[in-house]
Length: 268
Image (cartoon, rainbow, N blue to C red):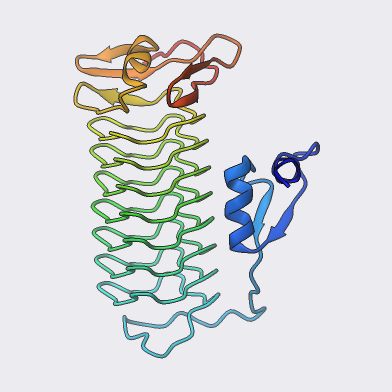
């Protein structure tokens, strides 16, 4: 069974697409599948998307696969609501309560989520590219395979969050709290981790090249020394993680394999 899972997660042809349930999706991601290429969340989307609902009064409204592009949802109470596959591109969700909300597969590109409560929210494969999550609470949230490329999470609460296979390239995580977070195989290339707290985080096979960090960044105990030896100071108190030259560089530590990737010498 294990062999079959690994084979399905890492097919010989990397362009193979699978449509699976959320449960199987999480299992395949854990086995090493690439969420953005190999696994797609199997959800039914109605062909005729409903128009956005104005304001924050969504009581009794079916939000599954709903088109809420640009909707004004400031302070909306969406506790436990099912927004699976919803489109919330450019939506304003400042201070919204999304506690335990199901946002699996939701499109939240450029959404305004400052100070939003996303505690234990399901954001499996959600698209949060360039979203503003400054000050948002994502404690225990499931961000498996989520796209947070270029997102602003400075500072955000991500304690205990699952970011397995997540895309964090160029994300702003300055001052973010990532204690005990799972960042297994996360792509954090070029991310800003200055002042971030990663105490107890799992960075197994995470891509960390070109990551910026500072003297007050707190790394996992088994990784801190290695990060320092693979970094170069670019300004007083600020370093950047360097990779190998022309090849991938891996190191084995008690916490697992950490992938720094290949990187040309950093230039300002």
